[in-house]
Length: 68
Image 1 (tube, one colour):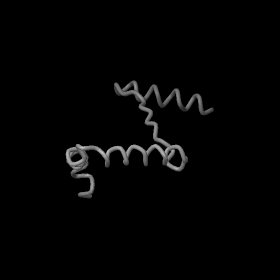
Image 2 (cartoon, rainbow, N blue to C red):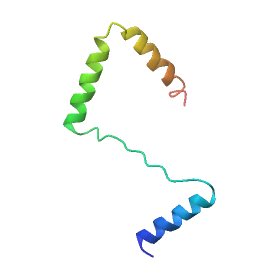
Image 3 (cartoon, helix red, strand yellow):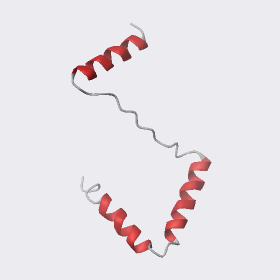
Image 4 (tube, rainbow, N blue to C red):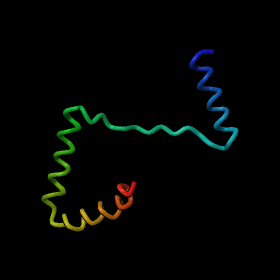
């Protein structure tokens, strides 16, 4: 059985349970342009007059992630 057939069968199994596949795209953090953009965004946030509010938001949405 080829990979195309396996993919089709997997999709059929998902659909039988009223599910569908989801693709999650993740940035390649080793690329230089990613690193430059991350630096630029973090510098922009750090220079913001609303930096305390921005950090409070990040803290609020991240709460519970490190409670393992």
